[in-house]
Image 1 (cartoon, rainbow, N blue to C red):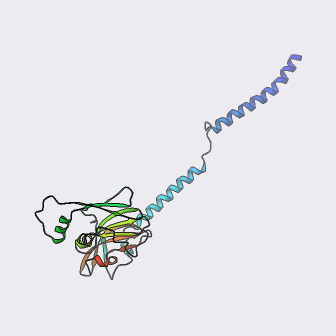
Image 2 (cartoon, rainbow, N blue to C red):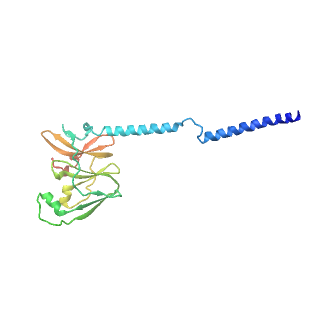
Image 3 (cartoon, rainbow, N blue to C red):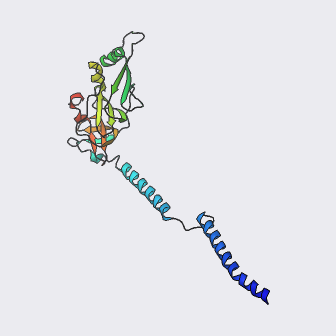
Length: 229
């Protein structure tokens, strides 16, 4: 009888210890992720943020071709994107994004300007560097007007302004440099080449787009170097 009482006394503490041990093991398994936990909310929030970002990106792209938003168009001019941007030039943006390098052969440039080809052999090439105070986000090659006199190199700056080189006039003056900022342009994000129908005649231009979708015709903004006046 005494031995049975001792056994009964030991059973109670043993069960309590066993339960505590099982509870501890269960907590460890749960904490380590071995026992499945309910999905955390932050993951769902991250997915929702990504969806919102994609939606904003799509909205930005939607207003690209809305040519009714050319804010400075003259009269009843109409615009058509022509995809003709880009021409043979040697301007290169350096890794620091503040230096533009180019190689110019003045002899060949003079031939192109005067429309004459000489018998010159072995053209001399000059290396030129243009330094900007802030970073250049993008270089763009395009033209305004009806001839090569309207050819441009455009520099989209880090602050959304636009600097430029009128290549034909810069070559004639032998001054390959930035000719400063184009007035009225702020928060610009992109350029497009376009054909313009102006009454009975037409010409080429470059459209600059700001971050609200508004478009600007560069041809009337660079009056001293265009060929349509």
